[in-house]
Amino acid sequence: MGFKCGIVGLPNVGKSTLFNALTQTAAAEAANYPFCTIEPNVGEVGVPDERLEKLAAIAKSAQIIATRLTFVDIAGLVKGASKGEGLGNQFLSHIREVDAVAYVLRCFKDDDVTHVEGRIDPLADAETVETELMLADMESLERRRATIEKKAKTGEKEAKAQLALIDKALDLLRAGKPARHAELTPEEAPAYAALQLLTAKPVLYVCNVDEASAAAGNAYSRAVEGKAKAEGAGCIVISAKIEAEFASLPEQDRGEFLKDLGLAEPGLNRLIRAGYKLLDLVTFFTAGPKEARAWTVTRGTKAPQAAGAIHTDFEKGFIRAETIAYDDYVGLGGEAGAKDAGKMRLEGKDYVVKDGDVMHFRFAN
Image (cartoon, rainbow, N blue to C red; front, side):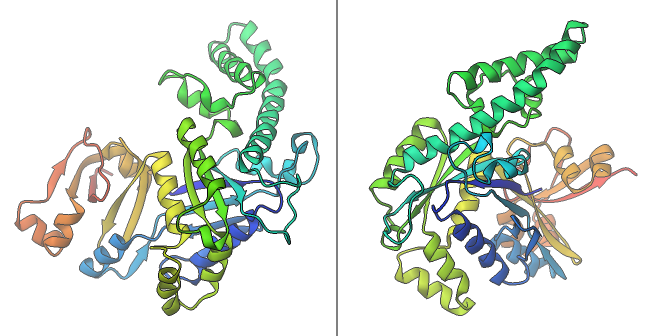
């Protein structure tokens, strides 16, 4: 897996410019990280990871396969989108299955680009977007509730549990709070996630700033950062304009371009890192002559479930995981060197996968 990120925002905040720039950046990179368009509003990119390149060189891998990030770009939302205003409501269903939602907020002044509300206020924009998503969630739940209630009245245990979760979410939404604020037990969490509520997703605020503010941000982005911190949400500062320019440059000119702007890396990398942090994801690797490949799992995933990310048969027949820490693999020249130095570990079913582990799974057919 990689992860799916829905991109939402009001019209004219730079959302589509950013989406196009990020996916073009990936398209313009080496073939190791290809970009493909699945639908007009969906872009898939390979997650750049220098570690993968090093592993491939050591293992003499014929192919490099990065883990994937999917962007789902939603038409600009406006007030009333949940009731059919504008185009956004037609596409809300596309983000019900994403892992996180990025709210692109306008944090720049530009007289040539009209704001739909006639003012620059990223906090108010965030509230407008979230309100429309909450209204859409309420409508979805209210439609489903009657059917579930009928089943619950017959004594169906699963329906009773589902009804309780629906009511928990509706109570929050009617109070003007997003569904992600629900207090859930570990047992309730999977069923709550299955409701596919838009406002139950973790949120990443993307502050789209002018070029001069790309490195340090500005007063608008700092206000959003404060909001994100208070909510426990993610937040990054990015300039869609700069990302668009970066995407159009030849590979050899990109480093100097970023350096001149005081930026250490392109926005795509920062967005990916923020998404991984928000979702608490880690990457493990498999490496051999055929391919070097990155795999993404949630932190805390045990070895059999990590094996299952590769193939369900690997999880079912899991025996052990031959595991080498990334630094040991690189420092000792690969699998043979690590094994000779006693750095290859045989891990069992209770082993929790760590970021950077290079793994080879043994399983019974």
